[in-house]
Amino acid sequence: MSDPKPVKPVVEGWFTAGAKPALIGTRCAVCSSAFFPREDLFCRNPHCDSTQLDQVELSRTGTIWAATQNFYPPPPPYIAPDPFEPYILAAVTLDDDGLVVMGPVRRGAAVEQLCAGTRVELSTGIAYEDDDATWLMWEWAPIEAPSVVAANVTTDETEGSALR
Image 1: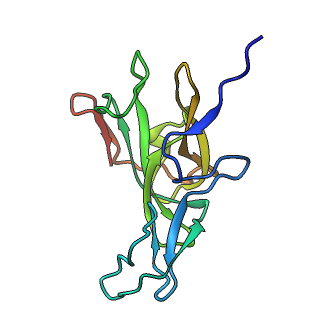
Image 2: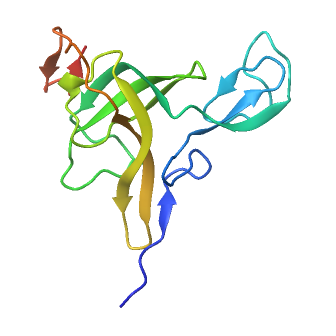
């Protein structure tokens, strides 16, 4: 029996795995601005000239700001399954950090159910597998059903996205 494949992040150093995954960012020690992906050289806040940045785990929860469904495979270096499966991307405002972070939504969710304000938490899922490893990506998992589904959602597969 062969050993199981190692499980690795698709982007090393951008998130932790495990039972409670977290995005890894930095926070300025002077102005408290948070950044993702991490910044190691200087504070990106134009009103701060600090170079004192601390690595932090960012908030694991947030609210959807916008969501869309992608009906076409993105270009390389993204590795799409063959055959390609449409997926949902969401821009999520993190609860404690004031950042909006894009990421895929857990498979099985319906874009029509992901209206602005839907609560989500960070999770991980398999991005793809190859002969060497199983590759993980962060993803957003809905943690509550939205109370109202947006009435202005249309799907235009010729353009390749669900529009909000």
